Length: 294
Image 1 (cartoon, rainbow, N blue to C red):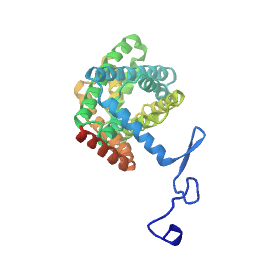
Image 2: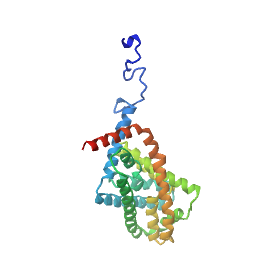
Image 3: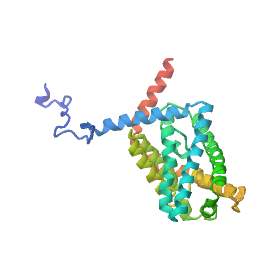
Image 4: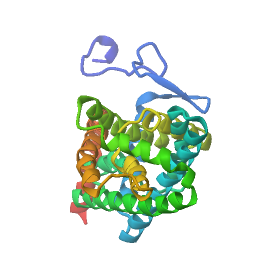
């Protein structure tokens, strides 16, 4: 019996773009494509970049992490210049975006940038939890070290910025553990992770610059608490003579960093994983099959 005769086991699929096609479409380069196809390509690119980060050599991790801290220090230098000239926190945050742009264009590494791409790579079988732990720990430590060293230069080069530097840093350390600061730390982690996601989806340097400036405006301009970024500011203030002890910084740093991780992993990364779970399982199964074959 043919499909026309009502055989339920045989059917014809509607042609793409027909009335029975339930796929959403997007236009890319003037060509209309299925949205699911775009999702698949995006997933592959995410896993590929995540794997590259996970499998960097120790030397590569140290260098990219150090430069990540230096790039953050560059952003803080720009932030202080604008804050000193205008007194505007929002404009200063926009200027800080220069540091985030440097991070992206120089392929440096920032701790909270690693909450989406490498996690996807691990779940898809392209890396291990040990590699992820190595990436996170080395990046965080070297971010802090690079930021401390760069701020030493900034403090000695621009004594006129000391007051602005100290005032900004003390506001973070003395804010305390409240619902407001908890929310600000969660938002900082999720915002930086979203920026990574947005940058990964564009090949335009102009859009990368726009995304970086927006990130600076939101994270620094709105005075969110970010373990790595804000620590570099605090280090500069300590070198400029602020009455902030290492113990005070550590007491602030540990819970802010944990909440940054929750914001990046739970608010941003987890929903993306749920959205692409079928692709994750398929890719993980393929990798396991390849390993057994070898």
